[in-house]
Image (tube, rainbow, N blue to C red; front, top):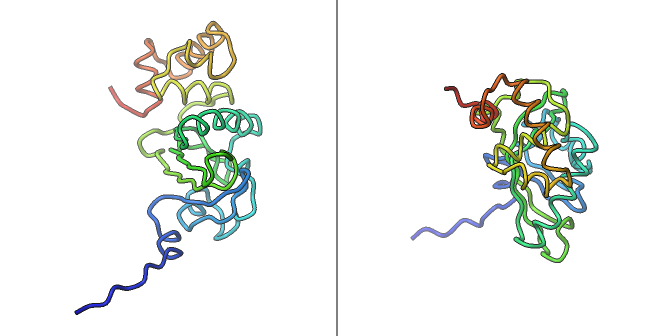
Length: 186
């Protein structure tokens, strides 16, 4: 008869195959080895840091925070794909998911996972912060009207950003743009 080994949650957390962290009020309280390596930081260097260090700009950090709250209030979880920034300054696509420990405090204590999806979706054009935001929504399949509502922009402004993205990615249709944003060859 074998006895069950106690589960070592700290070892599981540290060696998970995805980047993970515990946060409170958008400050990383504890990160795992995978998260540190993914973003190019020394072990433990992210602990105590604002999530802002992982974003290309302060504006993107603030806009994402504004977007998270109503979704977490409605669903209890948040998930998206967005362009993030490594310690070296390199930009990359990242799938981010999170859950608040207390549903009444969406940005309070929470558990977040990060998956580097840059192998499938390279960042291949110099984009403005707003273009990165619009690109992330396009990859999710959102319409210009839906993006406009989410970003408090007019649909015409969203279309202008989409047109700039199409030019930068040399895409002749919206579906070709999305494929190029996703790193799909045609």
